[in-house]
Length: 185
Image (cartoon, rainbow, N blue to C red; front, side, top):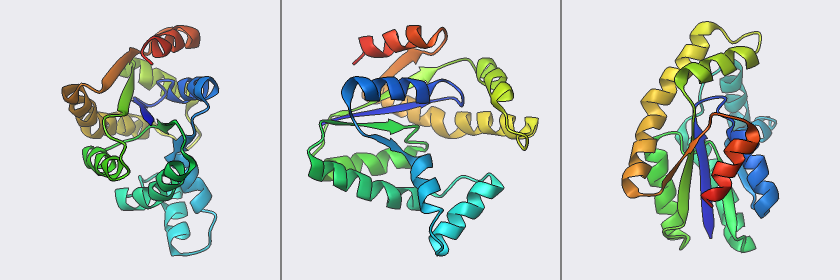
């Protein structure tokens, strides 16, 4: 089993690189956002709470997210897939610990690498402004970048210390970044 996570600042190009890797490997992609959007369609307590959080621009609590991840990983284990691509996760240090414990339980030891698509904060800010939706204020954009520094930078440091972080320079064209990703597979 090969588990590859992609993390990085908002608008770093993670989604583009994930699509290219999916085409190359055929690995299934675990997209928490897609899972949450799908679950929000159900008219029950959890579905409504997820939908409300989306509308309010709030993050979903880790236990909710993990409850969606579990079936995905169990199905993946049953399918004998050769790998998994994780889109934007883990987002918090304790999510990393929970996933490590789950992977160990599933007998997926020492097979997880985290690709950090690194772009400058100023570049992320400019990309976010260009991609902003009508309701995205400048304060919300700055808040997302601050959240990255508070929550995801410790995750990056954790995987760097473990020796399983692959830092990719995210500056340049899609093709240039893809070549850097490919050279680290």
